[in-house]
Amino acid sequence: MNSASLSSPARPENPHQPPSNRSLILGSTSRYRRELLQRLQIPFEVAAPDVDETALPGEAPGHLATRLALAKAHAVASLSPSAVVIGADQVADLNGLALGKPGNHARAVWQLRQMRGQTVVFHTAVAVVCRESGYEQSSLAAVRVKFRDLEDDEIENYLQAEQPYDCAGSAKSEGLGIALLASIESDDPTALVGLPLIRTCKMIQAAGIALLANRKAAP
Image (cartoon, rainbow, N blue to C red; front, side, top):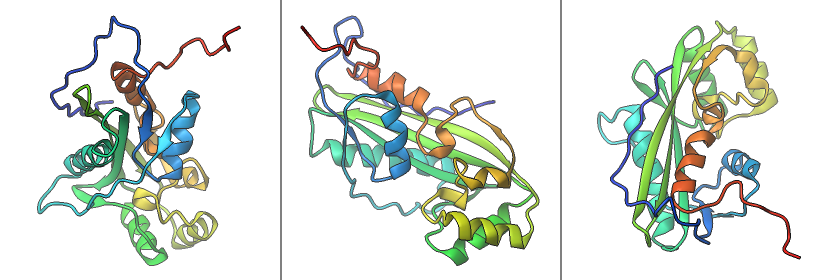
């Protein structure tokens, strides 16, 4: 499938030199992103970014996701300039209509009714920033999701079971939400959950974070 990539000018560290000892910070309080990043088995801290997530007038869903991912990374990096900071954001795109986190049951019902039988593009943006080295990069993973033609009682039963009110588009695909879907198309499998790890690995490694280093204790 096609995926868009929006990249900012970057000044990465020399890839031919050994990785730095920079700390890694996830600029997100999302438990889903934290669990995904833990798969890499590298130490990291978590920090809450103070960012206004209001969309700009007429802003396209993909642009919104990328702008917010960068804003979150910069917000945290401004407080920890020597660290490598990850920011991320996700916006569901229903024929140009941006759908974020529903926040409550009524809004989730409305979102899922709008999406049933439709193909929705989930734009998941990731940004990596290190103020001290001047590194800044962002990328956008587009995941095409086809929803089944859901009955009202299916929507209600799903929401009562999962209560996915903190998930963009109310679709918690790693849980019972997978039963809502007819198909998923993506080149970065974890993007739909909230953090495209293939893209994330590439960027944090370029920023100086070792991914597959020898982890045996020194004698």
